[in-house]
Amino acid sequence: MTDFPALPRAFTPEQIQFRASVRRLMESEFAPQTARWREQGFVDPAAMTRLGAEGLLLLWAEEDYGGLGLRDLRFVQVLQEETVRACGAGFFHNAHSMLVGPYLDHFATPEQKARWLPGAVSGEVILGIAMTEPDTGSDLAAIRTKAEDMGDHWRLNGAKTFISYGVTGSLFVVAAKTGTGRGQISLFLVPSDAPGFSRGQHLKKIGLHEQDTGEILFTDLRLPKDALLGQEGQGFAHMTKLLAVERLMSAITSQAHAQTAFDLTHQYLLDRRAFGKPIGAFQNSRFRMAEMRAKLDAMQAFVDACVLEANEGALSPEASAAAKYATSVLEGEVMDQCLQFHGGMGFMEETRVARMWTDARIARIYAGTNEIMLEIIGRSLGLGDPRPAKPQ
Ligand SMILES: Cc1cc2nc3c(=O)[nH]c(=O)nc-3n(C[C@H](O)[C@H](O)[C@H](O)COP(=O)(O)OP(=O)(O)OC[C@H]3O[C@@H](n4cnc5c(N)ncnc54)[C@H](O)[C@@H]3O)c2cc1C
Image (spheres, rainbow, N blue to C red):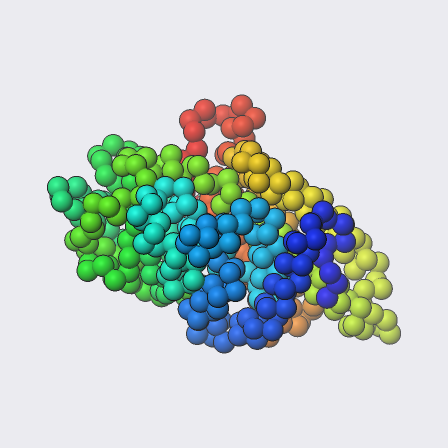
């Protein structure tokens, strides 16, 4: 595999060193386990504690909680790129660290942080977020999971589906209605050992087989009053605050996944022969690869610019929506072309690019579907329905 990308990127010496050490770890310890993870349908929880021991979970967490206090998202980007390169898109520790963890960072009380962050940093507590329900995903305001204020506690009832880490997760940020009005939503910290918490199906997917996705159910689940995360009724506002970085994480993953497929395929084009020459020597191969090279380089520059913008706290919702949208579309395009270049081998499960092709499909659906991304970008152009987008 060639080193990626072809275009030079500005990283500090520390970030370059960090990349080298993460690459060694991913290649030597985790990549050899991915086939077994896919077979069993989940990543061993021990992989999370191993990452925790290396200081690679919740990089941003303060030292008081066992973290490194590293808030520069370039390190997060490097970690995610190297994870995807060695192990694929299904090793979801980034969701734990960067999609769910930030809810604790931004909205948890000091007591909640003291209780949960050390375990999340060490990997003993695996974090999930539960918004989607059987009847609603994009339209989060229509959720039915309900938290009732019982005076001295909350009573939670409802069902969530498609939850990442739904099978192995131990603490969930749960969105629930706390009022009758549309959109009156609050967030709660729900541990999986709470009485009334149960797990439904371990869902079978067409890709990302190593990432467990499941249903979780709440039946008269009694939550202490201090399980409320952030302010009552402010669930939408809280989620909106974190969406830009969340979508950027999706963009980083899509870009790294597409780049990895490109690199694998580049090597295949040099090695595989037909009609007496490497298949890379055909004009079609050269042109398609050149096209992908140009698009990947342009997209990488955009993603890098978004990461630097996010480091300043200035990444706009429309820029992050554009990054999520455009990278996931390019990812799909690249996977399809790379699979085609592998011929019949491209359709074999044993071929990495074949697995990557199935893994890539979800990027246009989760973290907000691409249609929702287009709504956000389109509205920023002053076009159409002026109502604000509902986060989901
Ligand atoms: C592998 C996987 C992991 C996931 N992990 C999590 C998780 O950890 N936590 C969690 O809460 N959820 C998770 N999800 C759920 C995911 O976020 C939702 O599937 C996604 O948001 C879409 O919601 P939906 O499936 O209900 O689709 P729907 O909202 O029913 O959408 C169906 C179609 O209608 C379109 N549509 C909807 N509204 C509009 C509109 N306003 N304009 C135009 N088109 C529209 C959509 O774009 C889509 O094409 C996961 C899903 C998968 C598959």
